[in-house]
Length: 270
Image (tube, rainbow, N blue to C red):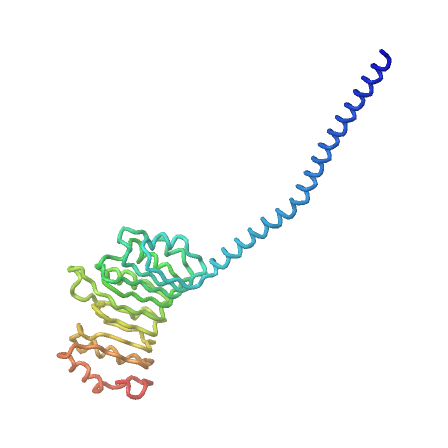
């Protein structure tokens, strides 16, 4: 009886050991299977992450290839800090931008060729550092400024004193600064690449024009001396001329046909 009990005990112990072995093997198999699954899923997850990174890079590259931007949002200085270097055309409405904003970041957009600064009716000043930054845009060929900017005539003189590569200059600005109510004198003769000039509003009084000028839109409302009309005579490449005068000053326009036409001028120019 004791022997049978011992045998039964041994058999029970053996079964327990085998059960533990099977349990351990099962856990090991499960762990191995999990590792294998993780190993199998690893490359797929890596591929997914890689694709996401590529998509993000492509989106960034597309953004960095943007060539034109137009904005009337407030905080234009913050926008200038993130605009891509690929930009060639920029139009900013500064109605919501204050004089205290720093426009120094504009200088880093060295590829800008066309720049339009517009102000609706705030009658403020150009943002700080704006004129200095424009002067560093070595590829700028077209500059358009429209709106109401206090002290603009003085700032414009500072800007155009530099040899900018401008082909087109369009000014339609009212300067509400009382210190500059009298139109400033401005010579553009040194802008040797300028072919189109448009001066409207209370723009500075132009006293000298570049000889290669082809298109001129000029307000003669503040021009009262004959020399201001005669300065058109040397413009041998002038093809399009538009003048805007007040009714009482129509005589100034009637004098144009009496002047000798510049050599090579288009028929009927004057």
